[in-house]
Image: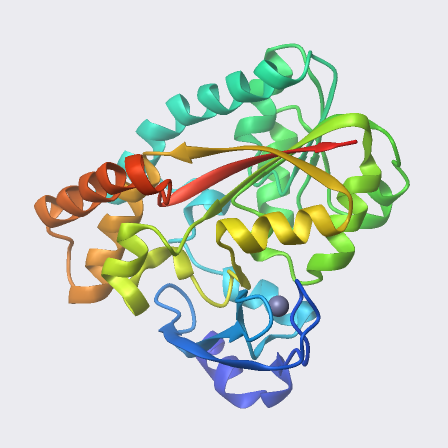
Length: 306
Ligand SMILES: [Zn+2]
């Protein structure tokens, strides 16, 4: 395979961060070794910052090489593939999830301008556009962006084009995107500047402190290294966003993610088709436990610029 040749041949593909992206502390210790199950099959190390506890993939691919690790038919959010039971389930649930996300945005912000940062193939942007929002999508992956544009979305691929839009948006959404961003501090500051005063930021990310996260450990599909560079918990997410001036408003559950992530994690753990029964039990247990602890498989954070 051309790709595996690339992955083993070029050692300049990786870089190591010397400081924590959240608190700038220089000491970290190994937390977990996780395999890239979908593209490279390589092992990656997640480290824990000794200052704030933030978990991040380190070493990690150079920013310019990250695209190589997205080249897989299995990477559903970018390719819209509909093969297999997992993908079918994903698509069935997605419609409901998209509607719920829109409701959540509209509960906090009256209709106006919205930036969907990391819009993928534009599914959420399209839902917002049809509901009357003025929508901009940002998506660096050209294949995904092409699909978004074919849906009628103003999707931008060049970051410079949106970086001129200070104080432009009433709402910015990042649905499972923040964990992919390489230059985290810089981007979070820029997101703050893109919002109008009193604007809202909606961020959904996986939560490794969930039951499914702890149950599957290194096989937990939502570690998804090296595409996921940051592995947030409630404390590190708030610390990062509040450090640039955001005010935290609330944190909400995403209850479907525990099922979807458990199915994939079962596959990674056993190396074969998932036992749907086991995956369902894990997903159900995760939500049941999270009712008390608040540690759902994925969480939506709402922040305000004020
Ligand atoms: Zn730290």
